[in-house]
Image 1 (cartoon, chains in turn brown, green):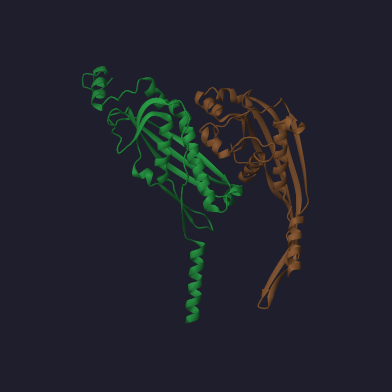
Image 2: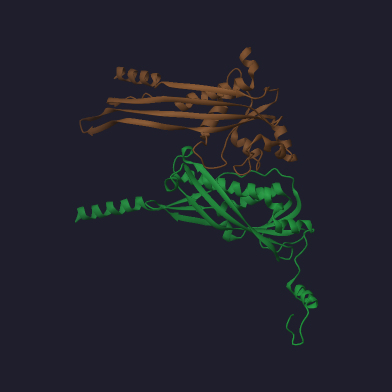
Length: 221
Length: 224
């Protein structure tokens, strides 16, 4: 019994393999001063396949706000409520060129200033299952039960972050994060899942790269 | 006999599980819009047709979904008015007692919603068509306009149809609030009313008298 538990724990620790790639394009210099904050929000202006999951946005925001080089983050919902109705799906600016006109609204400009909002990170993308195969069957009898078979599936995460500088109303740059990995579930009596944490890997890489992009000095120190 | 009863009981149970009704309410708070407040003291009349509004739909091979949109409307319009107008109150009728400049009466004209399996997309979607009547201090209709609102919720973010539909309905209500906030003073009816100093509509009697004095008539009394 204890050997089986050890095996399961080892399998969970091992997991499936994930390959992650991060690319960035910088258009302007970035600097985060004292009291400046960042918000990561998803594009929701139309139904599409590239709408980032709420838990992914939350993951990126959480990872950026923790650790040694943490930055001050505003949660997506808190931001949307605080600047309502200017960043709703039908009213949010689509390009940085729309920002100056939007910031002509005195109450909005004042609210963003109060929040100390320096960078607005628009996030698009999703995690999808790209392929799957194998079969697994389980049987239960009065004498006991068990499973036999093998399943595998591949997940692909692809996200792009567009960083807007709200002070200059220009795009500071873009970061894309792609990750792919195959999960396995062999079953010889007990199914042992070897899960590739694809989305989690994409989240960690993107959050880390965003932090380095916005605070390049932290990488040098 | 016992076996037959058991079988029919099981069949009824299966029918009950396949059909049935699920009641959904719109939960959560609405934000206050951050706008430059209009210098208008407005009464807002939410009648029971609006505050008890429910929409029911039965989908193929599915149960009946009843979305209760009405009870959230008081919260929605209270928050909306708080950010938009210098003064407001919820009134019992369209007759505003001074110092109110006029009364707004919202209504829901139509609601539709769809599930991801219907549209073969990732989204629960809700459409709400609002109708607004604007009345003067004496309860006379100044004009009306419509506002279509749309909300969606990605099924990847919500576990189950109930939560997905609730989120989409909430998004549609927020969309209505956002669109109303930005476009209220741009609606031709409202813009004319505001620009002319929020006057009362002339009573039908006085309109008839004015029209009569300005209308030429033939010898037999017919207008020419």
